Length: 181
Image 1 (cartoon, helix red, strand yellow):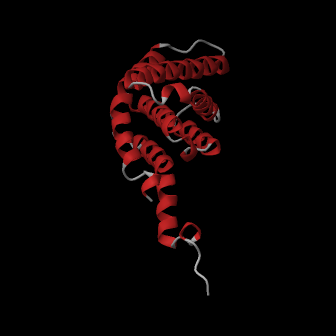
Image 2 (cartoon, one colour):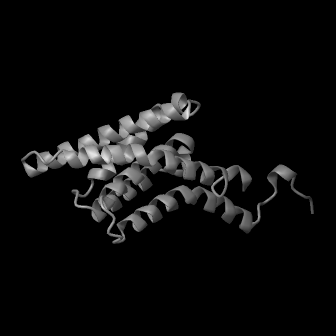
């Protein structure tokens, strides 16, 4: 019986499961974080944390590991976000996919950029997504909804991203590092 060359050897089932788990970590973190933010902790503005957290995760993983955040999964996460809040079904699904696409298009310039640049671009993307959500909800309600929640959501998104990015960088280099599998 001839042995296969080292490059063609079969991987053990444990190694395959480890690699698969590392690919699932970004999506699982996003879904679990949304689940935690959906629990009634009675934190003021807790509902505004969900879209900020989802946008931050989708932006980060689309920027640094786009393969681990497939578009259908992003749509499902957006649908989950819609069902947890009071937005029409599909609104955040579309907005998160648009955010993911915009991030992917600008990835080549953003990935090597300094953190302040990526943070500023995220803040801009989050502002556009939040304003689009407000405009679409106002259009569906056939009246202008109050604008202060949108401004607060943009501020929360901008303020949350640095600490969220620090945690996600740690996960990206540790438990989710596919190259270590």
